[in-house]
Image (cartoon, rainbow, N blue to C red; front, side, top):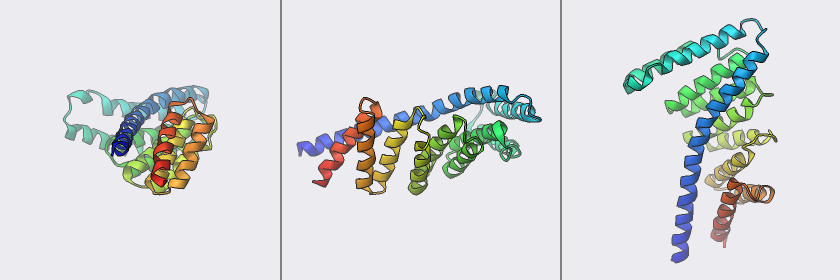
Length: 223
């Protein structure tokens, strides 16, 4: 009985940590992405129409968020809907403008809890900028959105895309998330394989330490 209580407590602590960390990471992505995109805009300033498109997208973002603290939920939702309509003409563009438009669209959809739509927009952002740092960030966000939507197959596939970016600085987080999805799908053996790989390759990482906790729990359950 004591072991069961300890296991339950450990699971609760892990779930709480993962949930809070995921929310924080999602918030940080927008900040990091904004910095990268601004840099990209400077690099390609000579391209026709790009500067104007980025200025228009920034204007849409500013209009949506201006005085938002004083708005009711209904008024804020209306501004978000208006922003989505205005962004639509830029989401098909290539390059940095298309990346930025799709990321902002995804952020709005995610805030409206339209997770499937947000995931598709983040994937579009990743596809339009596969060689820039926003790609793994966008894929990661898409996977989280798919998880929230309960689409575990799509979440698994998208986390695997994140792992193809070997230099991504949140690779351990992505591996843990993939293992968690496999676990949720009931594929315990596959989850253990990923958890073990994470722990063996990144033993001192906080996500690797969480992986070790899951290895202990899942291995005990199999006995």
